[in-house]
Image (cartoon, rainbow, N blue to C red; front, side, top):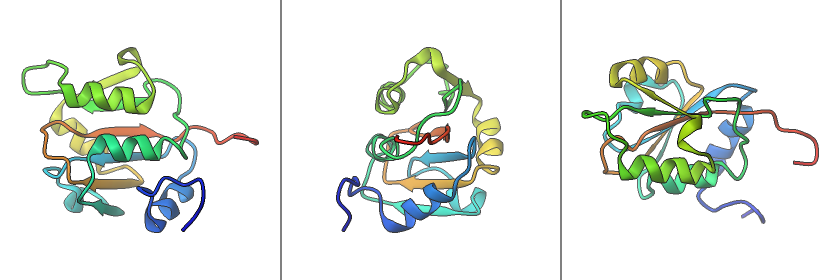
Length: 138
């Protein structure tokens, strides 16, 4: 156990997050996401939602410059409840988000440093964030 670390952040996950460099990206994906096919590094957290994992990741990872998040565009183009929850969990606003077509999102996910697959069952519950600079004293 570590003090001051969200218990959602396993040792394996912390190892990968720490190894990320400035502007490296991490996808926090729903249970439907083809994480193993797309990702070189995959951590599976099957009992957690994407919102819970994003909230925990944000306790140790600052956001990079805008767009700070990428979300997958829903089938009809509307912003879904799960997406609003992800925006709030990241501590940002919809203005700082880029919406990406499903297949373009998959292409970009294949280039990310890490994919975290969760137990999220709501569709379009996927988010990509890029690691900002970790400044002294942060």
